[in-house]
Amino acid sequence: MAASPRTLSTAEVRREELLEAAERVFATRGYHGTPTTEIAKAAGISQAYLFRLFPTKLALFVACVDRCFARTAELFREAARQGRTDGVDPLDAMGLAYGQMLMDSDRRLLHLQMQTYAAAAEPEVREAAQRGYEGLFELVRSESGADDQALRDWFGVGMLMNVMASIGALEVDAPWTRTLLPPEQD
Image (cartoon, rainbow, N blue to C red; front, top):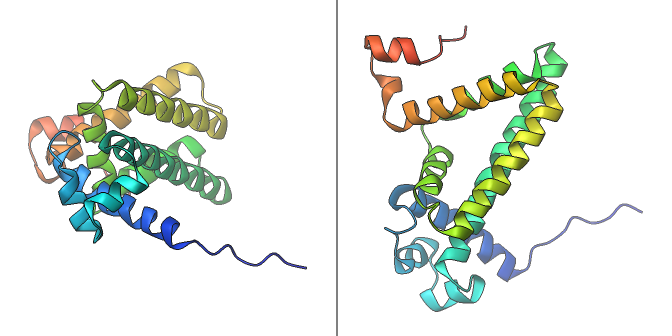
């Protein structure tokens, strides 16, 4: 007999809605610049209920950081799978998928990554970022089979792409952007 689909409880649904709202606000305002009242308002819940779901603002931010890395990992996993299906090198496929994500109009994932780096002075945030990067590294290495130098180069280009997208360099046609941005793919 087939298992029935899992139904989320009201608290789980509210937790997911809160995380979605928190990601939007944290991506814009950062950890230190975001009051929990603003997150609760964006989620349509009371601040007291926010703290029933997450005991501290830091715990909520770390949960958002974990989700950010999990979404990036899922993007890479799917791109590698599709790349193999299409006969494209998985490392190239993951890089192209990441570049596309950076070009999307909703850059919440990118902005949340950048806010994570800004908040990394907080030990819990730094540890979440380290766990996330370790997971991404292991995933990219296992999906691609790339050697250490290729992985170093790939992640280095990815970080440059983050910075360039964050500062709006994708919209600037100048010698420095033409040099630093990767060539457009057809």
